Structure formats: structure tokens, C-alpha cells
Image (cartoon, rainbow, N blue to C red; front, top):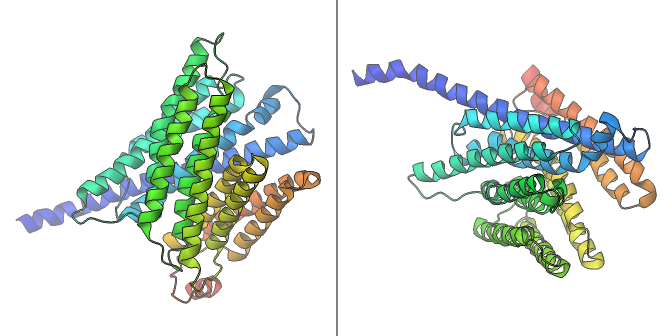
Length: 422
């Protein structure tokens, strides 16, 4: 009787799992689409405004003014935390699906509404409050899923650097977003005594998230070519998250503090991020130095992320500024590399390799152009062409939806595609 009862309930269990997996796929895809749209709209408006092709007032002028908010709030957090956390985290934890799937869908809906208000309203404080609500619920979904996996696991399993990066990024959001929301409410209610809080106020936590989640993805890219111990990576990430959050919260909540104190706290935060980036990059290089490295597409983006972060650290030491822009630019490399890694090696689906490599070459050339003042406009144009290449590569991959079984010696994707077609 028990066996018959189990057989009757088996289709219901399978259908239940399928519904949750569809929710995860829809939510994760929506997160990535929001990030891609925000990047295209914000970046395109900024380039056109720099060329003088957009009016200074009206909706187009508002889009140009919303560029910092779109890049900081609606690209990094939805892509690195919401998107990859929803699509990739269950597989990394050995689960069937994420918990609180409906809350995750509600989170992306709130973020979409907040993004629309950011682009249309002159006062972005309501949009910032909605963004805070969406970011908090997204972080809660990730942390609930991770902690539930720890509770259900009979054996003590070791988290991968990717899981550590996602978990610590969600914790950073959980601790810093209420401060951002409180500062927004304070400027809203007592506007005569407090300045208006914009997206730049949240730049330091975004830099921490890029560092934590970005390095988690980069270490995941190198898992098949080298051996890196997880414990040192986790300790460095945890120390960076804790010290960075404390330093930023102290500078944010110290009402009326003098400029010297704020500058000192900011230097401490930048120093922590610099030291952490150097240590994590050193561990990555030490783990892959003796390995036979094949320049796979995700690994190219990982190396680009390391180069950008290292370059920002050097500029920070020489000129006293440059790490935060480097971390923001590194988010682009982490997002693109994470997408190709998730689509190709994690999910096992084909994507056009030549187009993906062209996307990387265009992005790298655009990054180099940004360091030359006379070529910054060309760099922005190259970023636009690179974004189109990325959209085209993703569209072709999802349209064909061809599964590819990777081999140990790295068989060519084209051969797999021909074999599948035959």
C-alpha cells in the first residue's frame, strides 16, 4: 500500500519540482534581462549625452541623469546576486530549486517598477525605497536557500567560492540596504537639514558586492584547471565583507562628522578592498600557475576581471583614486563571464564561441580606450557594439538551445553541434 501510494504521488512531486524550476528560470532570466536593459539604456544615454545628441531636459535628460543609478543599482545587484544566485545557486548547492520562489518573482517585479520610476521621475527617492525593498527580498531568498541547505545536509559539505561569494554579497545587502533606505527617508522627511541621497551613496557596498561575487565567479571559472583551497578564499572574503560593511556604515551613520574622519574611513575601506583583491588574485594565480590552461571563453573574462581590478589597485596607489571605477568596470567582466560559464559549462548548452570571443575583444579594446582621454568616445562606442554582440550571442544560444556534452580534452563546440544536427 505504501508503494502504491508513493507511485501515485510521484507525478505530483515531479510536477511540483517542475513548477519551482520554471519559477527559478523565469526569475533568473528576468534579473539578467533587467541588468542588460539597464546597462544598455544607462550606457547608451550617457554616450549620447556626451556627444550632445540628447536634450538636457525632458525624458531624455532624465535618462542621462539616471546613468549612475542604473549602472550601480540595476546592473550589479540584479545580475550578480539575483540572476546568478537564482539560476546557478541550486546547482552549486545540490538542490532542485530555490526556496521562496514567489517572493523571488515579487522581488524582480518591485525592481522593475523601481527602474521605471528611476528613469521617469525627477525625484528618485521613491524609486530608491522600492529598490531597497526588492534588493532586501532578493537577498533574503538567497540566504534562506543557503541556510536551508546547511540544515538539510546530513554531511558537512564545503561551500565553493561561488557560494561563499553569493552568500556574503547577500549579507552585505542585508546589512547595508537598510542604512541606504534610512538615509533616503531622512533626506525625504528633513530635506532642509539633510542632502538628497542618490545612487552614489551606495557605491561602496556595490564595490564590495562586485569584489565578493565577482571573485566567486572567477574562482568558479578556474575550478577545472587548477586546485585552489576554499578555506583561505572564504576567510579573505568574510573579513573583507565584515570590515567593509563596518567602515561604510560608520561613515554613513556618523551625522555631522568632519571631512577628515569621513576621508579616513573611506581610505580604510579602499585599503581593505585593495588588500583583499591582491590576496584573492594571488590565490587564483597560485592555484592555476602550474596547470595547463586552455583559454576558454569564460576564463578570458575571468582574466579580464583580474586585470581590471589589479589595474584599479595600481592606479589607487599612484593617484589615490581609481579602485571604485575599476570595480564597477570589473562587474561587466564578471557578469559576461558568468553568463558564458553558466550557459555553457554549468547548464551544458551551446553558444557561438566566435561571437563570444569577439564580444570579449571589443570589450577589452573599449576598456583600453577609456584610459586615453582622446579615445573615450570611441571606447563608449565599442562598448555599445560589444553589448550588441553579447545580445546576439545570447539570442542565438537560446534560440537553438542545443545541449553540448563537454569532454575532458575540450572538444570543439562546432563538432558537437554538427553531431547533434546529424
